Amino acid sequence: MHIKKVMGAKKEFIDLLLLADEQEDMIDRYLEKGDMFVLDDHGIKGECVVTKEDEGVYELKNIAVLPESQRKGYGKSLIEFAISYYTDCKVLLVGTGDCPSALAFYHSCGFMESHRLKNFFTDNYDHPMFEDGIQLVDMVYLKRER
Image (tube, rainbow, N blue to C red; front, side):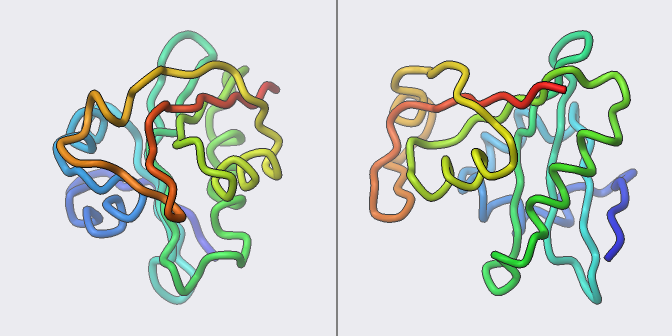
């Protein structure tokens, strides 16, 4: 397994990005200002995009693992890599839908709930968003401190 930073042509990974954020214009809001990392394990299995929000504060804007490669530790590996890559990282934030499976994943990676953005998904997406059969309304922000 190898994780590397993508230095150009981030849009080549749009199909993978769309697994985690299904509206391309929302991805465009953070893609170029963020760092993209891909996880290769005999082929690309996952990716993430991280932005610097403030001194010592980074945000995991997108993390996606191919469906057939999920539950094999790739997502956790990407998170651990991001935290170690940014040596000045004191807080890593992530925003997600209010979905039990997503929240359980982030809790298992050491994140705790920080705050919520009310109506984020209903106000910012051009169609209703669903995960595990649940309509997403609020964005739940979680944080992991070092």
